[in-house]
Image 1 (cartoon, rainbow, N blue to C red):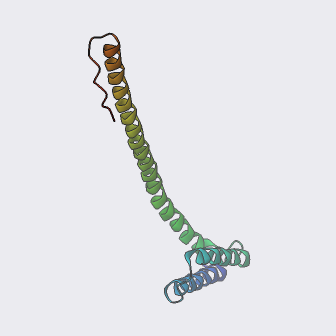
Image 2 (cartoon, rainbow, N blue to C red):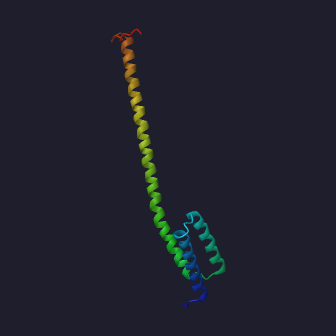
Image 3 (cartoon, rainbow, N blue to C red):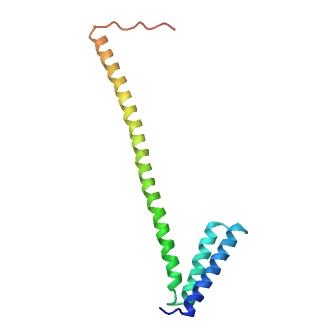
Amino acid sequence: MSVEILDLAALALTAVFFALLYYLHKKKHVDFGVRTILAVGLGLIVGLVFKGHHTYVAAVGTIYAHVVSAVVIPLLIFSIISSIADMARTATNVVGAAAATTLVAATEGQLDKAVYNGEVEAPAAEAV
C-alpha cells in the first residue's frame, strides 16, 4: 500500500476543518445548526478538491456513520416504546372514564325503572 501525498493532504485539511469547527464551538459559541451547515460546506470543499483521494478521510467518515447509527437506533426504539406507553395510558384513561359513566348511567336507569314500577318510592323533592 503506497501512501499518496493527496490522501495525506486531504486528511490534514479535514483535521484543520475539524479544529476550526471545534474552535467555533468552544470559543465563539456558534450555534449547532450553523456549525452543521458549515461542516457540510467544508466537506464538499474537501470532496471536490481531492476527488478520489479520500482513503483516510473515508475511514473517519465510516467510523462517524457507525457511531451515529449506534446512537440513533436505540433512541428511535426508546421513542417508539415511549409513544406506545403513552397511548396505552391514554386508552386506559378513556376506557376507565367510559366504564364509570356506563356504571352511573346503568345504576340511574335501574333506579328510575324501580321508581316507575313502584318498587321504590321516589325521594321527595324539597320546596325551595
